[in-house]
Image 1 (tube, each protein chain N blue to C red):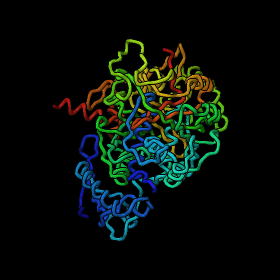
Image 2 (cartoon, rainbow over the protein chains, first blue to last red):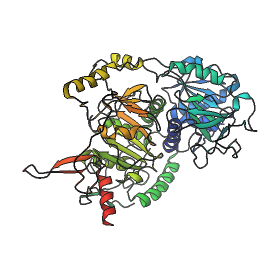
Image 3 (cartoon, rainbow over the protein chains, first blue to last red):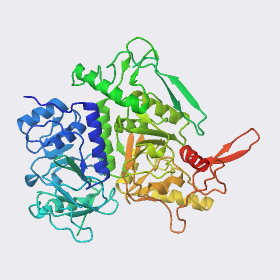
Image 4 (cartoon, helix red, strand yellow):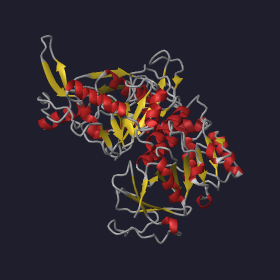
Length: 227
Length: 357
């Protein structure tokens, strides 16, 4: 059976966009998406909200796991083109981060036009962030124990599994001092890949992580601090 | 909704100017946003939605729902032409939104976009209007200023445009606004994290007067080669003894891209550094948009022995007495008498209201 998309296209995509814009303007700070549209099983509703808000017939999208129902759903509702290879994509949907291709395989822009680069939408299990940095109501309540103190070094959350999900400190444009965030189940060399790409700034890829109803953006300019 | 609904818009520096307009909304319910645009939702649903929306917003914002423009003018009985919410179609908004996200991701870099023809000429804020239209939602409260004033032609017209094509609430108070479109000023009142400032930009390329070729300026930005601009500022010092640029004073964003702050007075440049509010810039004729994210380093170019300085006045505002705000010099009669008043009319009005209370 065909699933629906946004119930009221104009206003749902506008509200979603405003959250994405604020997420991009305030990196590493989780924001709640206001509307989660129906979505085929392989795509998280939050990722679907991002795709329906930003993609149309003029964008090409690379799906890591192009399952038939997902492809049909996206083609019908967004009319988007699917890219065969990651380097041709304007947007890429990563549904299984552990086996994702390296960040360098996506378009990172032209030196005169660094905006001609890919935006990755990465589905992850959960975020953890410290509630005491740039505190905002409702932020950072997902995975991390709220007893963590800013003055002590961040401890791995009991919810997180694997070495890549420790709480990390981020800085850069849009972040007042530092922002603390943990992201679950990324490839072990993900942050090394990203750090290696940062020498090419302003070239790079921009990342949207989605988990449950939340979205976190990491533009290319956000730096991971050594803690 | 009655077709004889009247609303008035108070717009004035001192509250004396009243513009009362008679707006005749479309006589048929449901003749609003989206109809005839091939939305993927059934007419029944649209009707329900529109009436809910009308009830919610006509009460809070005292505005009739008139997103329709009739070709024969207001009040004509022939079927109205319909526009999408906030005038632009959804494909255009998505294009703008993708460009805006890239602009925020690369602070100060000019993203090309497909600028549309707007119902007002280039130079009247078409870039800012398109950015605002891509952002605007029914819950937003819009403020529009022109050189700091809420009551000038450009500001009044753009505010009315969005009140009409999007039905949004408008305000003149900086603190009440969620979205502020501005021509050539940053409000004196400090902005908050939940506010967005949209600038109208005539020339987005700070190097354009020094290098006319776009391909060349792109290369200079790619190489971060901004020597030309330093030479220009140096020549100012050699000729006049100081840097003579007083508006559109070039800034370096996040230590990387040389960026035009739009023709704001250099007085406003320090407000851009680590601003809590997101700042977006739209240039309609030049088809470029760019952004300065919140809490981002914004340096005005200068030399160690000629540091950046903002304008200072010997006068104070003659209306509110402020000695800190940006002042306009106004000729008040035909004998050359002048007075200095705040350029930011809302700031000035609030100070006078506080002084009276």
